[in-house]
Length: 183
Image (tube, rainbow, N blue to C red):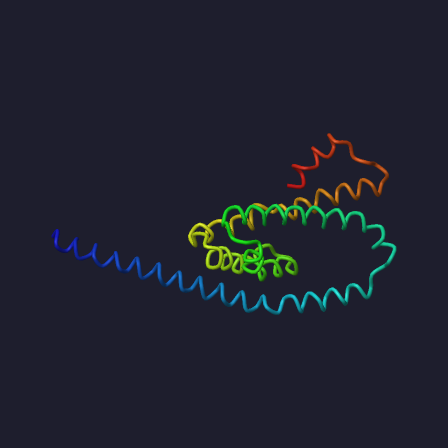
């Protein structure tokens, strides 16, 4: 009886390893197919942006210019902080980090979904910059779903913009109240 149990246990071990290897291969294949689809995304976004820009109202663009400039400024500050953190953690030159995350950055700029850049980010962080693949595989999708800092910042700034449209400059306490709502 113990021999039969031992045989079952021996069979389950390799099966489990085979299953893990199979699921890992499927995951890599899906990452590769997503990255191939993402290659065409900048061209599609450029064409769509050109179509939208042809119908823009110059008055509306001037009215939104302060909001857009402030938003891009804050995004730039956050990107620089992220790059400085990566330089510190990897001890790699900035050029190597920028090269490793180039594809993920382009996808992030042209995609409406925060999940579109996850495969390219995983590739850049684990294979090119040397972070642990298991940790990157776990944290990248989780952070893309739960840490929506860009969207929160956009909503907060949009709230301030709308308040200014109605002639109500927000006080510091009102901005503090806006922060959790945006998040």
